[in-house]
Length: 241
Ligand SMILES: *Cc1c(COP(=O)(O)O)cnc(C)c1O
Image (cartoon, rainbow, N blue to C red; front, side, top):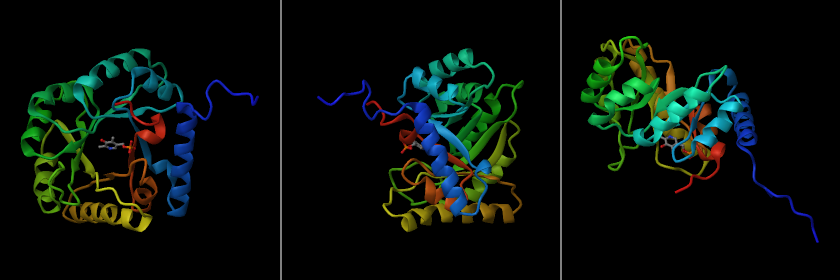
């Protein structure tokens, strides 16, 4: 009989995090970039609190959540267990008006802002003792009917509104492109988002963030200048349904 291990081929979250960090370092080296300027947000939607705690213990501080109801107990639990490092919370899901107060109170970043009304509410509801909420505008780069985000030609107008709201700090742009198989094709929408950011900076904004790249396309995103990767399954394994 061949001896079997109790957990055959199952990697721990710490091991997966190491693998992802190595992918980022290799991608940065290939792009002639410094890996330290590329942030990793562990996307923990549908993952139990224990999985986030394992990631935090392995040194992962930034977490991305899509669903407010699911996220709130996790933010509470992790803030309580965090010792030397505090978790940083990124909201990356669709935002309904009735959720803005909780998002403004419990998150550090919002990556999915796509309407003026939500921007005004988040700014007004940001607690006065907190720093402004860090914000990215979500751009529907492939102009898909099913997806949230402003179209590229509406981006400048929303950027100006957000930049003038006291409770928000406009940091950059975010996108979730249509999946593409090969590296060259994956780069196209990311290059487009980077071009849009440069255009806004040329018009007087100071946007330093490009939130783009997931488990399947992080190398292409890094090649096009991503500063924040949002990685779920490569860190936590496949998501429970
Ligand atoms: C789920 C999700 C991710 C992570 O996707 P993976 O393919 O699991 O890495 C990133 N960004 C957003 C907005 C998501 O909803």
